[in-house]
Amino acid sequence: LEEKGFDPSNTLLATSLCADELARVLEDEFVSIYGNNFNLGGLSGFPFAGNTGWGAMSAHVPDNGFCLTIHGPHVGITQDGVVGKVERSGIALVDNCCGSAIAASNYLKGITDGSANINPGIQLFSDFQQGAVQELILPHGKRLNDADDRMKELPYALYDSQDVLVRDIIESGKGGIKQGLALLGGIQINTGPDTDDYFHPLRFDYYDSDGNMVGSMLSKL
Image (cartoon, rainbow, N blue to C red; front, side, top):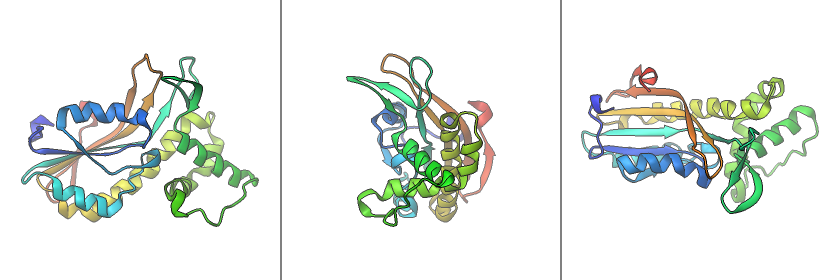
């Protein structure tokens, strides 16, 4: 990014990561470099700030500056290799991770096997983000049912849904891009309190000042 002119003084960091505190580890590492982030994300890492949030964020990018946007779901892995769960500091329970994603997956499984009690109030404001996650994962029902390991496949299905949404938001708001935009998408892998977390990058694209995606930088990571 330095080769393209990005530096902490001219770059706004925007993130769309899950609300879970475990997702802050990755976010905080980037904040330590670029300063405070503009938060676009919500449950499961979907960019629930939407077009309005993207427009506000774009207006906060320094004049003639850049935006680095990072997005993606997360998944836990326990010390003994169980995917979809993780140990948390101070909590005896080995917890689901990502809880929102797994709840959406269970809802989807109930639909595909016919056992679901369909909730007509799915978009109630008291839980509208989870309702949206459940709807956004619907196209991946067969994919998840056919997977050898549903929990391993789940974060990739979530990422693919997010990727479509992020691309649409960028396309709608590309007029707000100033000097350039770097978009890093992937999957956070959270482990226990005494071990390192990981990030699996799936795309790292550069957009010019006209909002055109001009190249992938993934091979440079």
